[in-house]
Length: 236
Image (cartoon, rainbow, N blue to C red; front, side, top):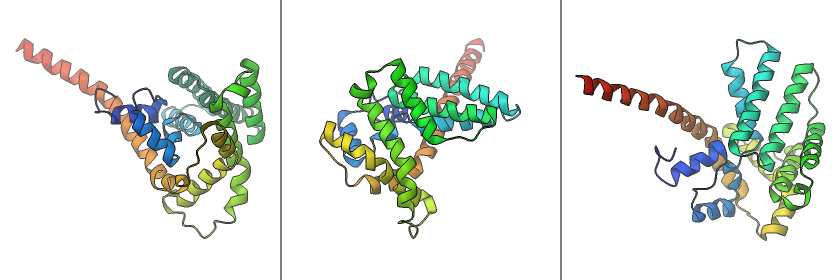
């Protein structure tokens, strides 16, 4: 990515695809924080969902249980690849619990999945409950979406649905209901423009991620083609 794109675009795309923030300039990071968009360069349930959808599309010829097995395998590989932060682990565990529900033909209970993910993560490392702000934010934002989204939805029935405007606004507001106290306590800031910024930005994120991933795949083909043509030039 950094070879194909100039900075900060290469690092930004690495953040979208892999949750890596190492190369993102401090000024851009502060801009993300100020506008409530820092979550777009952090791995979340959205990325896990994309992994499941991609695996389901690629292995569509397999049976249900085999696709579930491949999805779980790719989720584990993805978590290891991106470093396994608290938010990634929480999303992965919830995704795997949902896939196991499909495997056994059971209905997915999102509350049970959220509690189970928190239980297993704290069983592995009890310190994250108190000291890991990423875990706290991820858990509370997810809980906010689960429990406050249906409550807020009835107040926004007149908002337009096109481009996902209503859904984006509701998800942003419901996530901030429970995450805001943690943000204020640890960072002493609150982004009032976050809902509006998310409405304008989030609809384009899937397109950017898809084209960025396609560019990475094409780069391997392009490098192979370039080496092949160079070898032909040397021979002739």
